[in-house]
Image 1 (cartoon, rainbow, N blue to C red):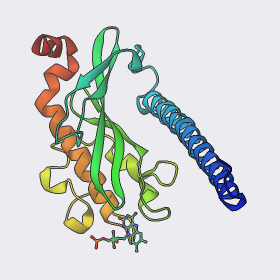
Image 2: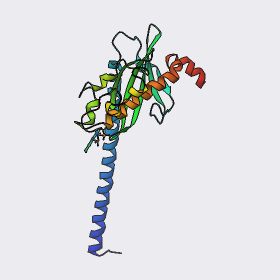
Image 3: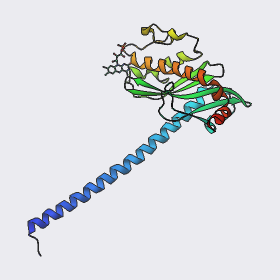
Image 4: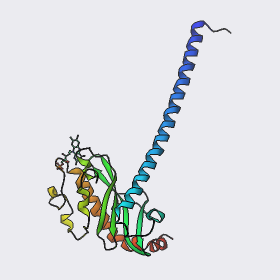
Length: 216
Ligand SMILES: Cc1cc2nc3c(=O)[nH]c(=O)nc-3n(C[C@H](O)[C@H](O)[C@H](O)COP(=O)(O)O)c2cc1C
């Protein structure tokens, strides 16, 4: 049976359009996949770089990434799944632990941090790995933008005491930024909670074999 000219033309056009749509969707999916894996690789590389810069050179002699300690999700860490911590040791002696911590309550969502704590429970340093805070306001938590994050160096659960673990606007010890209190408030709370986590799990963190026995 021969189709009328107009029907044939419509069919042809639909076919071309359909093919075009399939091709476009495929192309978008491939681009998205490639971009996602490139973002993941960039994030991993940023984390490795930050990990290696957080502890003073010479204070440890192991490769931090080689022995991650899997930590179960915990509200004090702000984590929802297992996240690795990294133990730094020198001549086989535990020196420090680096925790991966999430502050869930930034101005624009979660702020991901690395928190390095020495064996005595003092902060060696804190760095921001990833955030979506506003440029010029909340992004001063990045070391590249301001030295604010260095304000945690040397602090511990008892120095300052619990009431000091807040921004100055909330009568604590830590500066807020002008016009931006929400971001630093979220980071101060997350770092304080990371110290509480360390205090509660110090033994397992500094001697991971204890944790293996627990898990095993
Ligand atoms: C467009 C826009 C972006 C903002 N970004 C941030 C931000 O990234 N971090 C932040 O703490 N506050 C940010 N603020 C300001 C907050 O809304 C809030 O006013 C400020 O943090 C002070 O909070 P406080 O009233 O609890 O002290 C932003 C405000 C606007 C209008």
